Length: 303
Image (tube, rainbow, N blue to C red; front, side, top):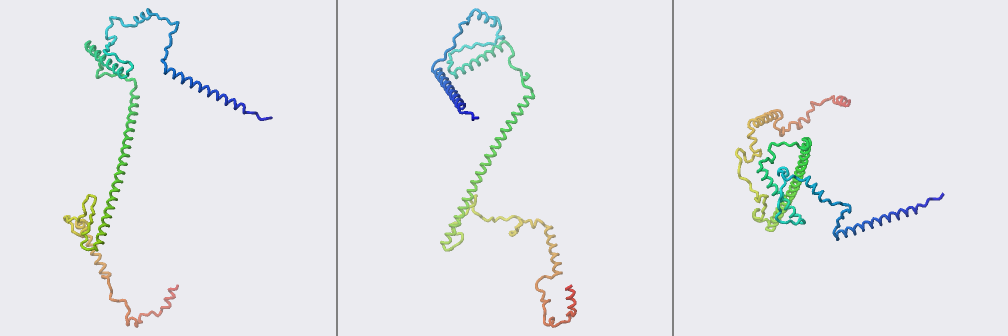
């Protein structure tokens, strides 16, 4: 059995696809041509059918049936006629909409005057309650949704403000760091310049003779304060707290003093003890305290 030849089928499919694409291209080109021709020329209105009947008498009769009677009052029709003094170009959108607005405004004012002259109430009273189309539960749901959206917007604005404030704080911090580094560099340069001047002058004269201007952040040089706090001794680093302790401080000192006296009485005052334990010629020749049983003692030790 031989293998089936699939090439003709593939060729047929390709030919069909090419034909379909060519048909589509022709349709698109025809539609484009038609649209171009419609833009160039005016659109022709459809002609009425030949079977149509124009019955004028019948139309007028139907109009009389549906029209208001002549003796009908204005309150039943509520129609206002406005006389347009100037002609309006219907193709001008702005003027046309402005004329609609003026007509509605004039008609409303005339209707208000007529209703007031007739003594009719036409405004909604303050205690008027109309049943809503939506239920209260539905409106509560809408309200919750609106509040949630408003809250999300406010939170987003707060986050944005926080990001901007953080960014600004970083910029300010970086600027301050740069200023401090610049000030430090200037101070180092001034110290180097002062040292160089001192070296060139051979270290002659007073130390303060050189041009050394070291200013702090507020622009003032360092000056030692001559003010003294009341109740604080000049060399007191505790700021007067030792004196503020009062009795507690004295009791602690008494305890330390008594302990010191007890130790001195027991162990002495330290220092050399007069070489009491040092051998002399007499103690070296004296063998009265020699232990003759030393060997036995050594054996016991070995055990």
